[in-house]
Length: 338
Image 1 (cartoon, rainbow, N blue to C red):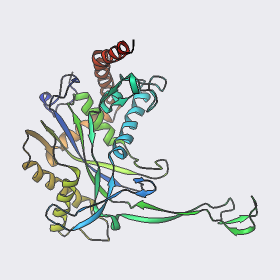
Image 2 (image 1 turned 45 degrees about the horizontal axis):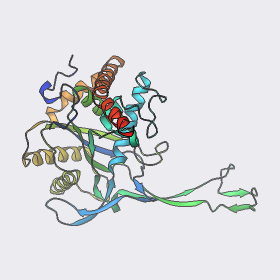
Image 3 (image 1 turned 180 degrees about the vertical axis):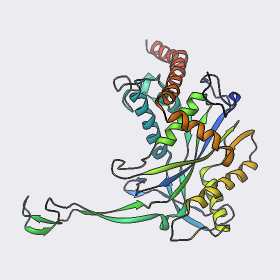
């Protein structure tokens, strides 16, 4: 039984194939910061020195959101849902410790367990870049540790003198709110259920980066989905094309944050132009054409019966795939040791 009426079944695989079969679903996502997240390595915000636009050859520094900073939170949201609806337990599958190898998370997002087996991720995510320059997109905060009396001065405890100002002060760069990261999430050889599973994970994920319990609020806005027989443009080129569009429209009003409506319009126009330059067969759901699909997915995922139907179908496909292909790999590995 099909779950979607807005997408032709021929764009999906009937079952998860063992070898790549040349079908791709590309989720066109704009990630918008809504607090002060941290995308960092070794204590510094990730950034890259790149060209401002495709046409604008000025070199600027942009914030970078590495691929694992994007895919891991989305993956964990999916695992949370599987546990919530009784399709997975921590005893069966513990993330990065003991993968069960037969649920939607393991089969769609992949796993590696030494000699026990591995499965390559069918979700491809590349580094995303901020539309605006690094200097306009981050802010330095001074962090401190107040005492229980609500001041920065101690009460003479732990060897300190009463009234002595604490030295527990540190500085940390944070990404500002309303910074935009265009990102294309690609699902290889999608079945209808795996497509909906990944789609739902993107829509539901709200926190990215370090210290996700305190900050890191990010909203994902999808402007479309492209089904194709190959990969499409890169995140960087899409970002540069958006920058060119906004510059031409005088929408870059530094140091003010970008207007979200103008970003969405530029993003849609930029990707439509870039898709005309591709040498692949593709079916595009972008802008107005995407609205019915987005609404249908939201209707499905907004009620318990709908989300259960997606998860149960994805789980059945994953277990069928694992029984057919992963069990053989495990048996072959065991035989090789004996």
